[in-house]
Each structure stands twice: as C-alpha cells, then as structure tokens.
Length: 412
Image (cartoon, rainbow, N blue to C red; front, side, top):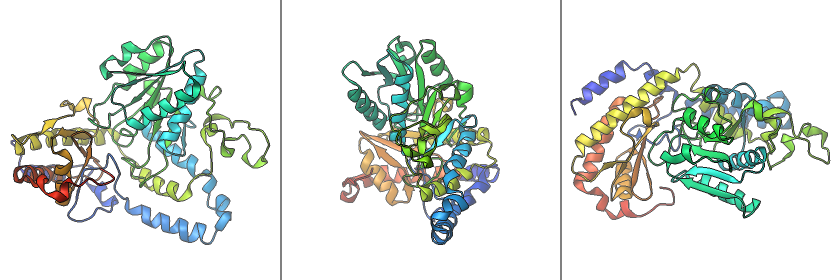
C-alpha cells in the first residue's frame, strides 16, 4: 500500500463532506464501522426528543395529535425518505418494521398477480425476508412456493408462475449489489412484480426507484438513515399499483375515514392504505432527525466517498494483514459493492470482539464474516488507516485466542 496515514489525513482535509461529521454525537476513542447495522446518533435527536416528550406530550397531551401535527408526522418523514429513493409524492409510507412491511407487500403483490404462485428470490438473501415469505406462502396453501436460485440466475429464472421477485439490493453479508434497473426489467418482462429491500441502500448510495421502474420496496430506518435502534421502517408502492393494492393488515389508520369508526373496512386512497396502526411518535421524531442529516446532500458525492473508502480499506487491510488468514468476501469492484466491505476469517467472531475492545466497532455474521460499514457522513479517511492497523494487531498478536473474546454475546 503506497498511501500513508498523512495521505489519508489530506483526503480528510479536502473532503467536501467532512463538515457533516459534526452533526453526529460520536464517542471519543471509537472508530465506528457499523453504520450498516445501526447508524450513529445525530446531535439533533436528543434535543428533538426532549421537546416531544417534555412539551408536546408532557404539556400538549392528546391535543398534540392536532396542535403539534403528530397525525401527519409519518407523511412528512415519508416524503423526505421518498426524496432519497427516487419516489414520487405519495408513494412512500413510514410504518411498522421492515418484516411487517414486507409481509404486507408480498401479500399485496400476490393479489396483484392472480394465478401466479411463486415468489422468486436469491440464495443467501437476508434471512428475515426468507422467513416472512415462507410464513406467508405457508398460510396461502401448498400450491404456493418460495423459489431460491443463485444471484447470477435470477433474471433467467423468472417464469410465467412468478408473481413477485423479492431481492435485497445490497447483500447484507457480502455487500454485493444488484443491478436494480436490469433485474426490474427482467422480472416485468415476464409479467412479475419487482420488490426491493433497500435496507442496506437507502442513505448509503443513490437510489432511483422511479427511474428503475420498480413496483414495490421496503427499507429500515435505523441503518444509514440514522433513525435509532428499532426505528420505524418504510415501504414504497408505485402509484400505478395503488388502486389494486390490498394489504392484509387492514388496520384503522389505513381506513378511508379512520375517525368515522365504521364497522366495516374501506381502504384509504393511495399509499395511506398501507398503514395499519397508530404511529409511534417518539420513534418517528427520532427518525426524522436521522433523515434530516441528508438535507441538501449530493448523493453522488456521498457515493463517491463510499466507494473510495471501500477501495482504500481493502488495500489497507490486505497490505497490513497479509498472511493472517483474511479473505475478501465482498466484490473488489467498487461499482458492484454497497457501502460495506466484508472479510472472512476462521476466527472472525473472536477477532471482531478483540477489535471492538480496541475501539474499532464492526460486526460479525455467521459463519466467518467480519463486516465493516462505511457511513460517509461521519467516517473519516484516517479512521480506515487506524482500523486496519488495529486489525493487524489483533491478528498478529492472536488476541482472538483470549477467552473473553470467544464468549458469544446475544447480538453479534
């Protein structure tokens, strides 16, 4: 590796996004490389939550549904997320979790394609997406099936029985990224709908669902969108499908007139029919602060920094840790990678715990993958150098052999 730490410091000095780091409350002595799992805390979030709790809830009480605009908060946050993912007005709703939203969309997609009984996905898709599909299809009956094929075969595997193709845009394990436009067109050419999980994409790289022609999408709020642990998720339904969209969780806020309290259900017009229950105001307020960290952001510049960071980190780690048993698990080409880099190591779990003990936070995924995420809003180039050096120390010293690093925690 020909670059020095001083070279990386000069990249930081010239970084057009460097000032964005001040928007986050990052602890001293920590290099945070896990924004792909939980985003850092925006400084504005604590102040906003104090206002919501102390003033809007504490003083306004139930009046704040109207006076503080709580009832419209989800729509406001959805509009802001829509700007980040290339959605038109009224195509995004913020609600529930990614898993629940995926259930809604899969059920609706099958309803939009009567006579088709297959959900197609890739081998190694994010497990909860698989589980939700299995659960739904099991409820629908034995004629319905989930078909899994290698990622490279997805386009060719779509057939006349495929109701929906369900894919995660950026693979959670390796960071490998699909060509959203090409696969959307391949699915639609055979009459299937295309459903994207953008949990590892939204806020990390430019997304344009409208240009790709996507039908449906889901995503979470707690990764790159910095909405906080367990933040509400969101879903996207292209406007052309709204009239026929029937989701199975017909809750009161998805009713055409929620406060009419009618005995029977009438779906609301447009994306509002995707809502089910009462919005979680505290969580929504935190999510809005996270989404607001992207205000005025040139997503092209963010993507350029992300790709450069990934390339540099691969080179730094492979140089510093040569001969230490690491194998690159992510695509080497930046254009085929999301905003993370993964390495395989036989002692990956313990090595990651030893690294975290040194203040470099990434995470581990079975069976042997060490994941490092790059959130360009708050990550510095020098952090890459320091992280690679810390990883070298862990591997050379065999710190992963220590008992405290081998003991499995509930969350890896």
